[in-house]
Structure formats: C-alpha cells, structure tokens
Amino acid sequence: QSVLTQPPSVSAAPGRKVNISCSGSSSNIGYNSVAWFQQVPGTAPKLLIYENNKRPSGIPDRFSGSKSGTSANLGITGLQTGDEAEYYCGTWDSSLSGAVFGGGTQVTIL
Amino acid sequence: DVQLLESGGDLIQPGGSLRLSCAASGFKFSDFAMTWVRQAPGKGLEWVSGLNSAGLSTYYADSVKGRFTISRDNSANTLYLRMNSLRSEDTAVYYCAKGLTEEVTLWLDSWGQGTQVTVFS
View (cartoon, rainbow over the protein chains, first blue to last red):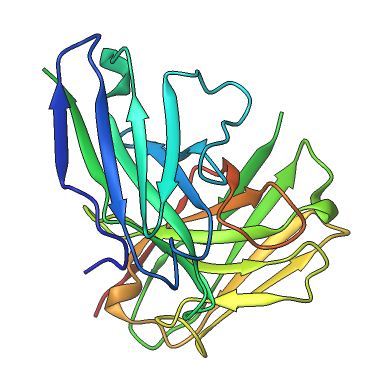
C-alpha cells in the first residue's frame, strides 16, 4: 500500500488529454512539492515535473503539473504512442523524513 | 552528458551483505545530492536513501534503516550503498539518481540503468 494514491490506469485516444491524480496527506503533498516521473518498461524513470509544475529542459509543454491541498495532478495533452508508460508521483514526507512514491499509473493509448 | 553507472548487484543469501557503487561522470559530482531508488520485480518505485552533496546529511526509508548505509566519495565521483542483513524483500533493481540541488529532494533529473540485487535462500 503506497503512501500516495494514484489510479492504476488511464487511457485515451491519440491526440486527446489525460489527467493522473495523486492523493496524499498533510505530511506529504499538503506540506511539500510534488514530482512526476515517466517509466517506459525496461528503462529507468525520467523526471517530467518537479516542484509541482516545473519542467526540466527537454520535457515538452504537453506535460503539466499542478497541486491543490493534499492532491496533485499530471496532465498530458496531445497524447502520442510514445507516451504509453507508467507514471509515478512522488514527494517528501515530513513525518517519515523520507521520500515517498505513488503506486504508479499505467497510461494506455487506445 | 551526465552518466551514472551502477555496479555491485548480485545473487546473495538472506542475511548477507553487498555494496553497490554508482560511478558518476559528466557533471560536478560534489555539487549535487544523490539518491538510491529501488524497484522490486513487477512493482513500483521505492525510495531507499538520499545523501546531500557534502555527504553529511543522510536519509533512509524505514524499510532499510539500520541495515543500509549510504555514502559518497566526492574525490572519486562515486556513490555507495552498503546493504547488510539482506532480506528477500530487498530483491529489486537498484537505481542511483542525481538530484537537482545540493540538498536531498525527489527532483531526480538523471538516473543510472540500475543494478539487480536478488536475495534468495
């Protein structure tokens, strides 16, 4: 059971948009900023979003992040077949004095 | 280009010890915090441990606290993870990752390819 809760899967057609939620508590998302990672099977994770809504260089603006209260959201617009992957949210948990990840969300392109 | 190359993964019996290494290149290693993240077979990501740039502030997941020790040699551009009292639930691919700042955060902008640790009896 992960500290952060994500839906197991989301799907949409190419070109459409998906949103992935990440729910936490006052000790993690409610108090700290959130990151999002993309992991294609067999490869290492890649940082998509940090500090709730900042994109590292090279990440297209089709990926966006937001946070409100104890929840965060990753939006992906203009879905492409290459976006099929597992997506993880993560943040620091002040009660645990360590970082935590969500259980992951599989994005499927229909 | 940033490169992180993990090594040291192995097959090992419960109760045994291993030391993982992560050789870094392509950036000023001593300026950035480093982190270990693991992934059990078919499972999600699990944060294991983080260490600030100076090597003075360490953080551990409860699941490994007291058994694992993170360290770094800034003169050798290398991160380590000493793992003692290994258990079957420690079986995973272990990734090292570079932080965006000198302090430990989850802003991990570069990752290695991972090294496999399998604990079996």
